[in-house]
Image 1 (cartoon, rainbow, N blue to C red):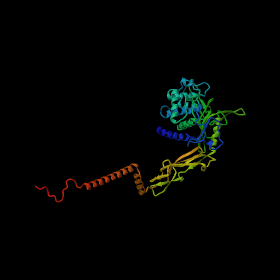
Image 2: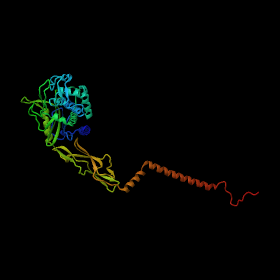
Image 3: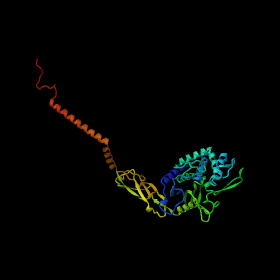
Image 4: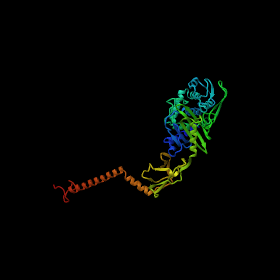
Length: 457
């Protein structure tokens, strides 16, 4: 179970980081959506396609969106067996008294006992800063140690501009993150099945304790419930977390589902606007609803690449077959703005291993020969391998000829052949010179005339 989760999270994050490294900004493609906030992001959480992106790499204060990381580390400890949902925890003096008066709490008291599960509902439903401290001490031994674990986890997830100072998000100039990093953190947290169950809770009833009678917690997320404010509920919305401080503004992370499609939105630094009738509009909720409507209504999923499509052909050497057809390795569907047709997209073909556009046989069907990138302006929708459509056999005669020519063309072979020729020439010269010497000087000093009969006595 743990190993499967590790690999699923690893590949999930790899995909997320690849998609968000240079995010597509749908607002650059079509007009009609503009979020009045410090940063905003809208994406399909299943495919990590970015529909809207504004200042998503800018470091900003997250307020209580911080508690998503806190909740995830608690769930991780439970998954590792270090904690249990039904484990009873006693609130320490520091955990309670270190929270400033007037901040969001679950009204926990020093010495009050709740289970880990109840404390998780306290931080995610009612945004209890006190409960966040209690859980931090429980997981890591101290709030300071837990903060170190938060930052280590952020680094492990690939967060690029995130630094935590506390587990609840109360303002500190050194406590910051980005919309992009919050997307990564939220997606990782959603891998734990209990996370969305807790984050999507409208209300939760805490049992009586020694300090309180039974009490009900109501969500701070107006998209989920009209309990705190009417007029914001969004059909299909689920979770995730709200956050508000004066420096951070109104922050919100939410998901929504419509017609089997899901979207995940992030808004940071939205404002509260007083309307003509004297009521106050919390724009983090109203604009998130607008973002969801825009994402669902103005985009449709289209096939931009098909694995059966014949994209290009390359020349083939060392074979009786002169060309090989390439096609995408797999189908690709993407969410496109309704005013953008597949035909409007730009295609770029690349063959890094075959710069001359010639592939040597043999070639196996499915062999990767290049890649195709589909884009529009600065928005890259997909980069997919191009594979050979079929097998191409090599010609034995052409391969033999190529091998011989390649062998002969090697520098070391040419040098060796030249040396051999020189050696042969030298030997011939030596042989010829030796023959001349023999003819010139006869057969040597041992020669005697034919009629010589020896010395007379």
